[in-house]
Length: 134
Image 1: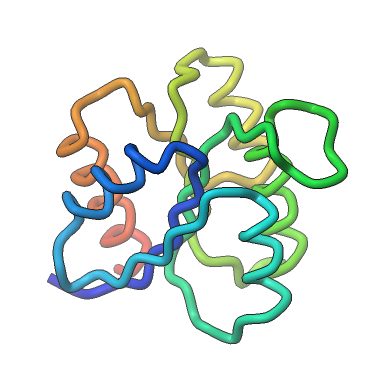
Image 2 (image 1 turned 45 degrees about the horizontal axis):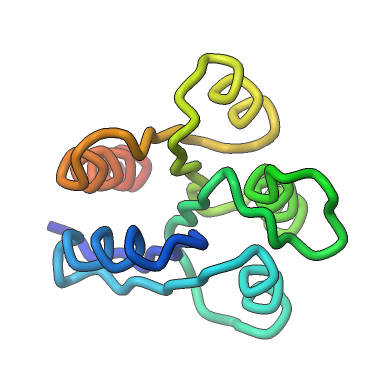
């Protein structure tokens, strides 16, 4: 199994803990708890990341009144990386077709529901990473 550097951005630290511990050990996980941390990482780090997985509902996004700060982060990632963007996935408890469509239309590559077991989330993430690497 190939190893990846994965950035996970989610304001729920319990979910971050569970997801991080469920991912295979060979992956490097960069944990961020806000969109602001993500923006700082993009400005200040030269670290290569294979995938970003972002919580859709993060109310702490700087300069954004809209509660869906994760969607703003998806747009920022697309703008930052352009066509060479790493995989951008959305992790969310909002599982409607409207949310999925909106995320994909605005630059997300994947839409993964958090309402399933953590092992299924990890399996989906792993499958998507391997497909993209192929």
